Length: 176
Ligand SMILES: CC(C)(COP(=O)(O)OP(=O)(O)OC[C@H]1O[C@@H](n2cnc3c(N)ncnc32)[C@H](O)[C@@H]1OP(=O)(O)O)[C@@H](O)C(=O)NCCC(=O)NCCS
Image 1: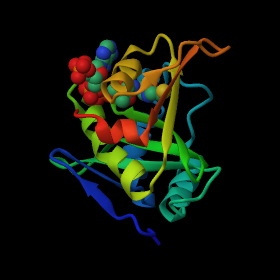
Image 2 (image 1 turned 180 degrees about the vertical axis):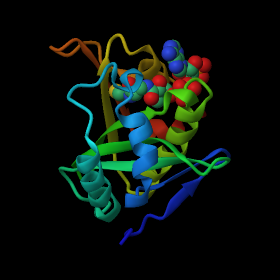
Image 3 (image 1 turned 45 degrees about the horizontal axis):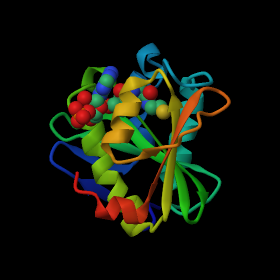
Image 4 (image 1 turned 90 degrees about the horizontal axis):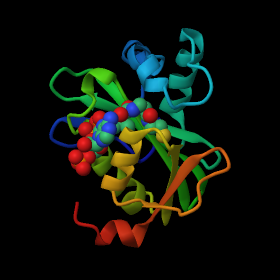
């Protein structure tokens, strides 16, 4: 059911596939106004969330044209405190994103989750390039993307978003 991917452990978090049992933890942050401040669209309701987690738990890890979300589980409490993921544009390229429960902001969890996740993306899945977009006012996301070594394009998007990318070679050469 989980394909080749099982889980990626690090010191304070485990990055793993979602399961339907994560619904309560997921709902605790997914619709939080602080989390959604710079996101488009509406949060999912409970029914949509249940369907989403079921789909995510069974998704083939190289399925292009799909959003692939991975739970960030807090080792100490066992709770899911956020997620990281990518939209798989093609077999070589993904557009990444992340969100955390606000109670865990600014404690290095975002960086820890992404530095655990990106080796999987580049070295296991073998993507050649990742991209990311974020609102120009989203200073937390900007700081995290730049901390990961992502390069910002000079031109801003027509919607005033910033666009970033990172090639596998750049990631491998980087000493975080
Ligand atoms: C973006 C997000 C995941 C960052 O997670 P986090 O765990 O707080 O980030 P970290 O503690 O790992 O910090 C990573 C870097 O960002 C910086 N940072 C974090 N929050 C910041 C903020 N609000 N303003 C400025 N810098 C910030 C940290 O100082 C750190 O940089 P440094 O290592 O150079 O000091 C979190 O703020 C979030 O979930 N935001 C809402 C969802 C969202 O907008 N996602 C992105 C959609 S594109």
